[in-house]
Structure formats: C-alpha cells, structure tokens
Amino acid sequence: MSEHVLEVTGLSQAFGGLRAVDGVSFSLDAGEVLGLVGPNGSGKTTVINTICGLYHPTAGSVMLEGNNVTGMRADRLARSGINRTFQIPKPFLDLTVRENFEVALNHASTVTLGIAEVAELVGLNEVIDKLAGSLNSTHKKMLDLGRALLMSPRVLFVDELAAGLMPSELDGIAHLLRNIADDRSLVVVEHLLGFLDRVADRVLVLNAGKEIFAGSLASALQDEQVKKVFLGGSSSS
Ligand code: ADP
Ligand code: MG
Image (cartoon, rainbow, N blue to C red):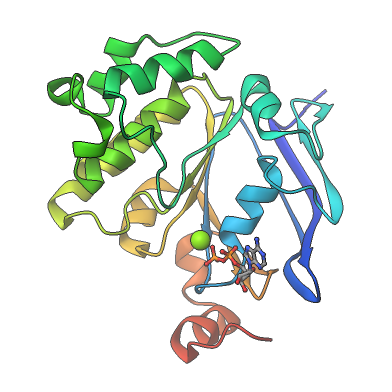
C-alpha cells in the first residue's frame, strides 16, 4: 500500500466572508520538499496555520501517515510529527538559546536529535548561552528552526525563513534545508524563487487562497496564469 506522509484534501479556511484558503489539496512523500508560493495575502501562512492546528479548518482534511489529524491542536500535532517555523519567530526572549531548546525537548514525544547536535546544525553553538532576546534576526530564525527540529517532525513547514537574510547566507540555508529533508518532508514558503529552485522538488502556487499551479518551478514560471499573478501584482481572481 502506498501511503503519503502527508495528504491534504480540499483544505479551506474562511475568516468571516474572506476565503483565505479555498480548497487546497496536495500530498507529500518522505524526503520531499514542496515549495509554496504566491503573492502576499494569497493564503500561504494560513495554509500552515490551518494544517498545524492554529485554526480549525472550515473544510477539508489532513492525514498524517494514514491517520486523520484534521483540526488537532498544535501541541498535539507537534507531538504527532507536524511542526512549523514562524514567519516572525517567537522565542522565549528571556531564556537562553539552550533553555529555549530544552523547553522544546521537554515537549517532544520522540527525540532523534540532541541540543548540541541541533545547535551545530542551525549554526548556533557559539551563541548557545546567550539570551534569545539578544540574538539578531537570522539567529532568531535559526533558533526557531532548531526548536522545531528538536521535536522530530515527520513534516516540517518553513514559513519565509530566507526572507530578510543576507544573500551570502542563502546558500548555507538552502543546503541546510536539503539536509533536513533527508529524514523528513518539508513545505517551504518562500518569495525568493532562486532560493526555492535550490530547495524545492516542486511547487504549488496560490492566488487568493486557491491553487493555480502545481508542478516544477521551471514550468510554473512558463505558466500564463502564474506570470500574470506575479507580474500583474494582483492577488484577486
Ligand atoms: P500570505 O502568507 O500568503 O501572505 P496569509 O495566509 O497571511 O497570506 O493571509 C491570507 C489572507 O487571510 C489575507 O487576506 C489575510 O489578511 C487574511 N488573514 C490571515 N489570518 C487572518 C486572521 N487570523 N483573521 C482574519 N484574516 C486573516
Ligand atoms: Mg505569510
């Protein structure tokens, strides 16, 4: 029996009259990296928030390794194997990097990586005893990624990790994400298409909450509707 690691079907999320996510479906196999792209406000973060248990979906289902996890709360999902990073990380600012990692580890149901290993992986070993509040924004993002990794996710959602980083940092981050995907599946939200090209196996393009394209990034860039949305700057259909 072939079973996807993650299977999302007809996912919808409405806020009042706004259909922020409107019938989105995709699946992920082990080790796969899916890029999620679309203009600002197209629903990328809401897809993550809805799958990861911040909101209960208005419609649709989420299956993790054959188990229905639709609408499960974020903390339970994290223990079940779905985790995410935040577009704007929210570490405990008055705890050190190590203490932030300890909090994550205390909430993990499965431990595959230790704190030292994760600190090394995300490049934080030199600041491990510094307060999270004293870190620069790149390090805060890496702390958030490390926090998620310590919970041993089967599926990890990464929301605009590369945005705002120095161009010189992007190669390393692309490499790191590919590395992380050796053992799990990733959904990577990113505006920087050159970066995404190095990381994602395929992309899903959203506009106004709806999927408008799924396939390779190269073919997305040839697609008339995708070109219109990106070059025309309109996110309403
Ligand atoms: P993206 O991540 O693609 O930039 P978002 O998923 O953040 O887009 O937002 C999609 C749409 O949903 C936007 O119009 C946004 O204003 C709206 N939205 C997101 N979260 C909420 C919320 N909690 N309440 C009301 N509207 C929201
Ligand atoms: Mg977003």
